[in-house]
Every structure is written in C-alpha cells, then in structure tokens.
Length: 114
Length: 115
Image 1: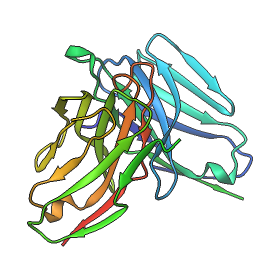
Image 2 (image 1 turned 120 degrees about the vertical axis):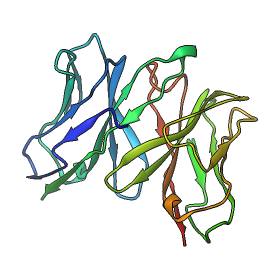
Image 3 (image 1 turned 60 degrees about the vertical axis):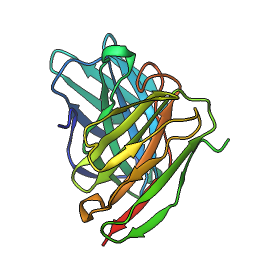
C-alpha cells in the first residue's frame, strides 16, 4: 500500500507565485524525500530530510517535516514555468539487512502559467 | 556520465510473450530497483537489489523476475506478458540502500504496451 499521499493532486498557479505541496504518511520513517518528474521523463531527486530534522532549504525549495503529524510540505518560491512538473514524496524506513524500500506517493501535478 | 540507461524506450507485446527490460548504471551503485508507474497509482516497487547476487521482492513482484549478476546491470524479465502489465517501467539506483543518505537516480523509463 502507498505510504505517502500528496495533497493537492493538482495545483495551477501563475509565474512568480509560491507553490505549496503537502505529503502525509502513515508509519514511522527514517527520512522523507521529494522528487520531480517532468512529462515523459524519469524522476529527479530534489531534497532529503531526515526524521530528526524539521526544515531544510535548497535554492528556491523549502521542505518541512512534522513527525508528530506525520506530514511534510514542499514550498517552491517565486515559481517559474520550468517548475511545471509532477512532484512526489517518498518515505524510507530501514528493514532488516539495512536495505530500504522507498515508497512513493501518487504525486502533485503542478502547472505554472507564464 | 550516462547515469541510468534503460532500453528499449518503447515496446509493444502480445499477451503471453516474454521479454527483458534492460537497465544499466555506470555509477558503481550498490542498490538498484525497478518501479512501475500507472495513472492514479504513483510508483510501485517491483523488485530491488542491494548488490550483485542479491535480489528481493517489492510491492508488486508477481509476473516479473530479476537477477543481478554484475553491479552495473539489473534486467527485469516479464515471463508471460499480460495486459495488466501495460505500464511505464523505471529503473533506479543509488550508492547505498535506497534512502541511506543517498537519493535514487532514475532512468527515463520504458513504456510497455501489452495487447
């Protein structure tokens, strides 16, 4: 079953506006990652936040993690048309032997209108 | 750097046919995995490998086989294709286990249609 669930499923904004996407998950995690997927391409890693971190920044991206609420948010500031893509959260939890099965949500489709 | 290379990019099969989806990475990554992506379902893990000679099942392994004879290659075999296997397949790799401080690197996918 899916671990992470993104919200909203789709988001349409104007260039220059901020975009916020949320991710909720069900069980305890070691870390949470966000990925971007452009149409017809593979996923690209954006940012990883560990379970003991609350906030992380990377350029125009800001990720927060609230383990008590089992939720995370991805904020893209000053959006550009090139940010148009689907965004996925993925959660990881260590299993026996040290391997991990990274579980993805269904994604938020972001459209940035010029 | 080539990264993760998947072949073919597109494939059409008839029900009952078998085929192998190829995946190769040139980053000396220990961990490799296969996902399928279906509309409204997100990505689901099929099989994964934490090193040469070691494979394990993911969330949806039925109808698929994998092997890992070298660090670089991780082929996915469809034994007897079914229309339910129509999907986009992604191979991904990372330096260590999938999320131990090492993000996944994805190929550009194989779009498979089974008629």
